[in-house]
Length: 180
Image (tube, rainbow, N blue to C red; front, side, top):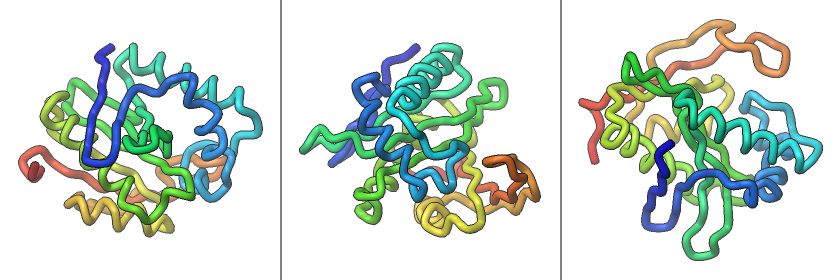
């Protein structure tokens, strides 16, 4: 597995580590943070450790990867981002991201996603990056539109989340549309 460490002006995006589990547990146990994620709020720090080990194992297999988002100035983990699905044959991947509630509205998600998209197109040689977003997730929709993702349409009852089939919007950005 490649060791990825991406840097922006304010952030480091790096491999998730077990030492991140306690902080990520606090975020992933918050119903507002997990509202649009495909997990139910965690009830124990061990769940975060298990999730990190599962995700890192998937990274080794090349099916997905997820990184911790760290503020350079404080070395604080503030969330995660990564590719939930990687389709090497078709040079595409699906992006996902989450932040602890205290870090919302500060531009951190856009900064992390932008560097992840750059990594996807330039280093991973992807042609297409997708994002599936629930219609009620207005903040994520705004973020994707600000980063030039195009809304392709509504996928009706496309996924099962927390036991219920949900609609999602499909957004995408193509390599030829990407501006460094």
